[in-house]
Picture: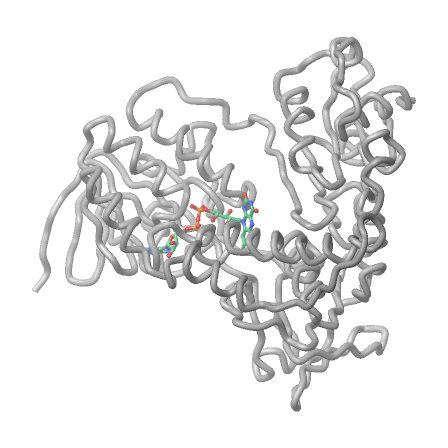
Length: 450
Ligand SMILES: Cc1cc2nc3c(=O)[nH]c(=O)nc-3n(C[C@H](O)[C@H](O)[C@H](O)COP(=O)(O)OP(=O)(O)OC[C@H]3O[C@@H](n4cnc5c(N)ncnc54)[C@H](O)[C@@H]3O)c2cc1C
């Protein structure tokens, strides 16, 4: 028998975006029902950002150990994946158990329903045997899932997505990674540092195709130096399995691995959700600047197709919550920083040079080699990196920047602020940069602007 209930707001999907919007609404005294078909917390803590960064950290420790002979004497490095797997299980994911997150949501006053939500009519959501009616509105925060490309033989061969890679209890002997974006490269480098023979296949003409070409070249150079083979500009056309997986590329090259990781992008998760009741086709849910997708419907995070970052989902959550509460909304178009947590970290914000030119801007560009800065010079092994600045010459404003290096993601914070707050380039030039920091590379890049 169907049970009927109601709430002020129904939040579908309790990942970083859904949890944040629900918390804000509960704090404001609204009655909130939150629904998730898997784990409260979403992709980020269980299969994404957090466990992957634990892997990256551990792999980085191994690499630093390998640099000891060049810097500080002798060290023997014998990789063991067990501590990583243990940390992921015990510290990041609670053995993929969300009891703590559910308790936090309920303690804040929310009512949690576990199950797949389906929209029956605008404002009416069904979960299992229960139908909930929203008095004020519905927030869709259903995130994204891995794209599964149609390559002959792939489904039969079986493969990893990020989920199996994160849940691995040992590093494979060999690994083929389909997709040279952030997720693919972070995992490729981490497993390689644990001893896997890794090959990366990227259909675009370079890895990290959305980043500056200089960043792609840097990543390829560093990965190659660590023994990872990169096959860019060639698509996979077939997969075959015996004891290993064998991937044939369009030029006839064959790459093989004991495991195959598919990380060719993510797709908004809206299948079966019933968005057609709001006149929305999907898979992405288009939104206006207040994150409204339709009357009484808001969408936030990965499902909007505006970018796949936890910080963006959380930012969207703040906008939607403010709009639902009738408060002024933060700027949806605030610049979105992005970081690929390879070593070197590759961070970027705003326009690439090519995008700025395509937008019709009169562009000045300055690039500096992080290894040639005083900090890079003293750092020695592992100092590869660069700073690239893209300036709108007519407005004397930084409109884009790339910061790659040992702390590339942290240095990006400075550049993201400059782009975000429209700090004039003249003001940036007049600032005193502590010596010798990696961020002093910004001064060198400013000096190189032309
Ligand atoms: C390996 C990896 C590494 C990453 N690293 C980073 C990083 O370093 N930094 C960063 O910013 N981002 C990173 N990301 C991306 C980040 O994880 C996502 O951008 C973020 O989780 C999106 O949050 P969300 O709230 O939009 O959706 P999600 O986290 O995807 O949560 C959506 C929730 O909705 C639920 N759901 C879906 N459909 C339904 C339904 N019909 N009914 C009920 N529930 C439903 C799901 O079960 C899920 O819990 C990484 C991702 C991966 C895969």
